[in-house]
Image (cartoon, rainbow, N blue to C red; front, top):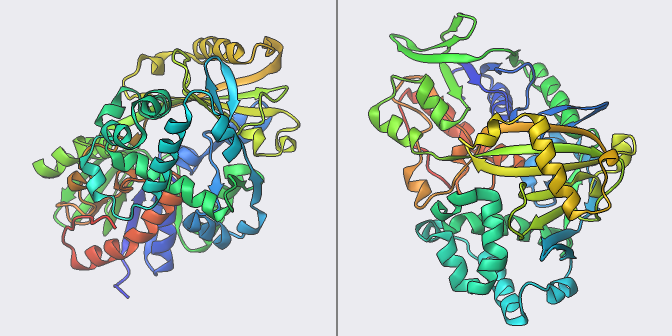
Length: 448
């Protein structure tokens, strides 16, 4: 085992927490620093009226082996509640279910030949093992080849725009492959059913349990610790915080966005700066609504009609028992946007007016009295745009600053940014981090 060293993990999201736990279990001396007043990052919970639940929507799939293993370690996997969910589409001004094979055959926007090609696209993608060649192909080009123009225009492009906006033109076919592969594997694991799981209490309970496990493993946790700079010193690296304090650990791992790393670590080489700043992010505005009544039986309603201000409807209480919310119904309205979108500057009240008016258009019987709570989460850098040849331009994990490592969601190559992929990234990175710490020299991350 490598000689124990002092490690500073900068960022207390799922990635930072998992890295901290695994290093501590390897006998390392670990301190976890988080800028906010609580751990969790994108997985954190918040208050909605008198309810505490996830700030963003999360589910566990049957195929999420890494997340389920972590939950088992936390003593929570046996509490996962599994539910067969349904999927809807809002198309042509009306709701259409597409939750089984018969409904797929009846799906109105595309004809039988188009449906055959759509099914063939999904089957073909699910059987691809080596995604590297897909990184060289624009996603729209690949979809038109396999699904045809009609299906691409009516199904794929609205879904791509919903997730990536105008940035979908920069994405490679590996993005849609990763999305299809995860969902196809989940359905195969669920005997062709769309089975999603959740832990009662949501991520507030998971994060609380994980914080306790971290502390018992010997990890020191420092909240309200915002990093303002990382500098090279004669003995390695020094980290400065907003309160003026500094630390000089043997090793530091920054887990925030790549562009933030470039801003804080000004002594990185020009090539490292170029690679970090070359990572492009997509932002999100995600509204959480508590309603008096349910909207649909669908966990997710995909929207193919243009003009609506949000990009999907996630009805969490189609999955989670409404008893978890005191009989109320939780709905998320996400809108994926560029990081400089003007909507980031709008108030909750302004967004509520736009979003709820549109939701009432989709559901004409919905009234203002049905809305109990409306709250908006804003994250400018939520996930990386999977550009062409993405893995070939990935920044290094270990850097030219001795003792500094930059590990973040940008290193989830052709994934879909979910908790399972984040946990997997953390655990796969531990041997590399320990090896590089022992050698004290930089290394390039090699995606699996």
